Length: 231
Figure 1 (cartoon, rainbow, N blue to C red):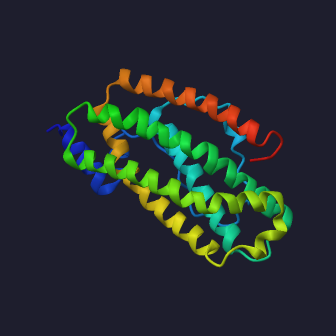
Figure 2 (cartoon, rainbow, N blue to C red):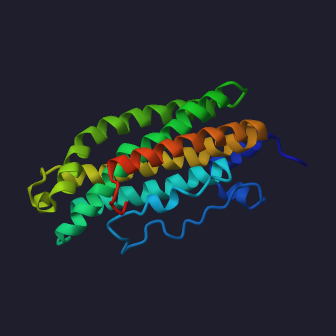
């Protein structure tokens, strides 16, 4: 017997994207690099700017890949001893570029393009609650980043200042990574399956156009922020 959309979303919430991927109805994102050690201290965000998103969910998962790398990078910068000053500068500049420019664009995708469209239709209460929780967490991340962004900006100017960072620098970076991972799980296990199964192809096409527009703005802002840096 065929399952209802509500049952599809419940299955995805219970077992994550794998429940739908097994049925060939979920866009496959390789997670082989998550948690990998030995990553470079900088992220090459700009190399991906020219890539046009081809699918809403695929693009959102790609954003989450970059978010996880940025969070791990922030923790490494704050806790790993012996990082050369040049790498500290480049890594901090990369974090500034990501969290000041790229992350707000991704959050806008979710708060301005996805959340309103899901609210317009009859989605389950748990999805509505997840959407509210998602936006509340976005606001909380903005407040928390207000404390660390100035420190990353200082390190981007002078890597030797790493030893003079406040005692809470490492703990904040670790907490940020942990909270982001919890946040991403909420979206991947509850909200993204609802997008795929409740929104029409026309709605997803409109969302995709909006996301592309934000990425054009993202590219412009990133180049203004760091015209020559490898970020």
